[in-house]
Image 1 (cartoon, each protein chain N blue to C red):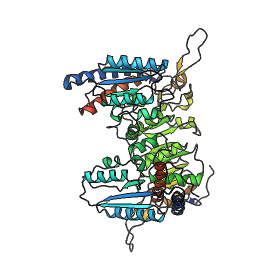
Image 2: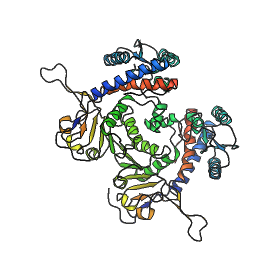
Image 3: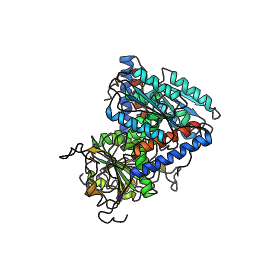
Image 4: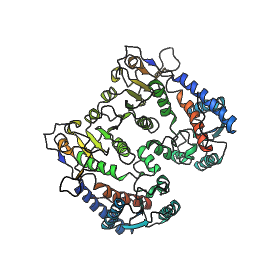
Length: 305
Length: 305
């Protein structure tokens, strides 16, 4: 790996990539309609009035419609019983117009999230959280797994940047079930030498410094410093942290888990925050819904240009 | 980690550990009988006449009876249809005397192994191969996962040798779904910095040399040499390879994936082949059957002394 010139890291344009991906998904949706008479449908279920969840759900519904899919929105009262929610999920499992089901988390405390997730038909589990899908990803069965959106988006950015990942040393910082672990599974399936580091790791800086590919998902503001990065490495920053507002600001600035200004002096390529990984998640959700649709109808997935 | 004196590696006695584990399991079985009137039962299903499989199955049945469990043996003809085998598995799922079901692999070509494994009730899947159990292990839900026997046996040897594994650098060589990947999940769940290396890894010797804990499951005779090992490291050799017979020998010698004579000069502790990991697998199968029994009856697992 060649040493990058100081300060010349490529800034990976996740926002642009996500927009292109959504265009590609729109083409796929058109092809499914034209060639098979199928309209992919995504159902989103929201329980209660969590303001952040409401924003996410609205944004998902808007983009679902923009790519030509059918969007089914179910907003249930915060007092909805677990039984009622499970009934709704079962209805959506049985509804042929619905190919993807997303239950927005977190759910109110009186509802068992695991129980709800495991009631979703694994084939419609576009979040990839059902244990059957976790198992498929862990065993490398990518032809049948539904893969969690954020790590799959990171993988797409990496492949776009680097091409074949085979043999590269990948270090994932953070071991959450939503990002860190599925990311490691994807990197391993793509033939990377794959390592997970975490809060108990003895010398985390030294481990990171060995990575050709460094994916950071620890939820700690600017934890990864410039001298944690191997010169020329590709750095994917999954963190989204809000700083305290500066005087005169209404809201604090959004920053990642990587000290961007330092890191871009060393890295070969790096995602910014915002505008890096963040916009990928919904775009991949839509792509997952197309994948789920094609599998359920047993038709080949149309190409994305 | 202190540098070990040349040649003084502790030889890890897997055979002795496995015998102690079986004694502990026998105590648990007695306690379940005495305190709850429950006799754990393990069903083993063999299809066809594979000679190696017949040896394994006989050995499992013998040791099952030795620890006081009930052993159910089903030997089906090589021409058994998939449908008949699935019916049998369903019967065993429904049989309250059966707490663990093991279908000996490989199955004849006309039977879909995945379909058979996924017909086993995950709670009775004492091999830990069902995707629900893979998913539970991958998400760190060890209270509910059934964990594959060989990697769980390796973990037991490591904890016996080292105590708390937290913060240690663990490298797993090999990424099979039966050993390498579940081993990595177990090490991560035990707070190791965890890395998987494999045939596509660029400098596998250098990666191994960084490990405090090195688990090797690559199926290549003596691939790991002495200079791949960090002085003082704990080395677990999962490989079982048979050498060509020397003149005058009837059968070739069994050796591992690690060049033992070199490695023991460098390592702090190492498993031999034979007598290391090998004897652990059946002992852990019996321990898993007790775990499965206790979960199915919702009783606390009796202590093993």
